[in-house]
Amino acid sequence: MSTPNALGLKETSYPWRPAVRVALSVVLGLLLVGMVTWRFLPYYKYSTLEEAVAQKRVVVGMNRGQVLKSWGAPYKIDVTYTDSGVRRELWVFEDWIDSATVKHRYLYFEEDALVGGWY
Image 1 (tube, one colour):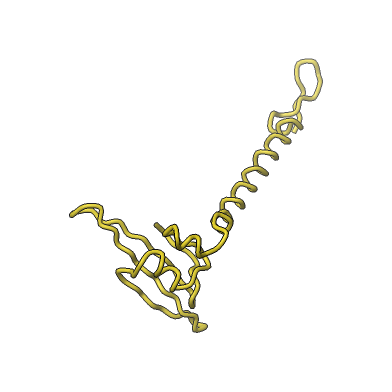
Image 2: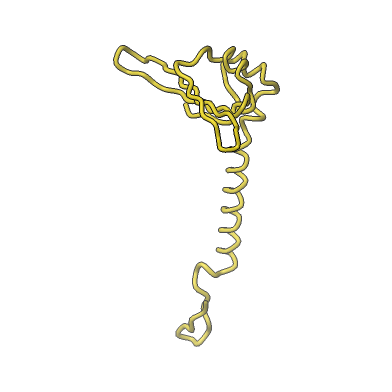
């Protein structure tokens, strides 16, 4: 978008200047690369799932046995099935901070694979 200035020359509005557009493109590109890297970073943090178990960590892709070795038994397990028959489990872990404060951790399984969690 251009507008004439006092000398009659056309002036490009700030967001449409080439240098600004290049800078914005670079920033958005770096943000996208960072988001993709952050999403897949846990997969590369541990060379094997056994290493994660040894460090008492859970990683997407573990099976139930590996999670049990790493974190122990959950407080509660909720089982549901999808319309297509896929078994889904929600494992709830409780961590008591003190006598009045409890922290919950949640893990989500589909069939025998850990697919996500919140803790």
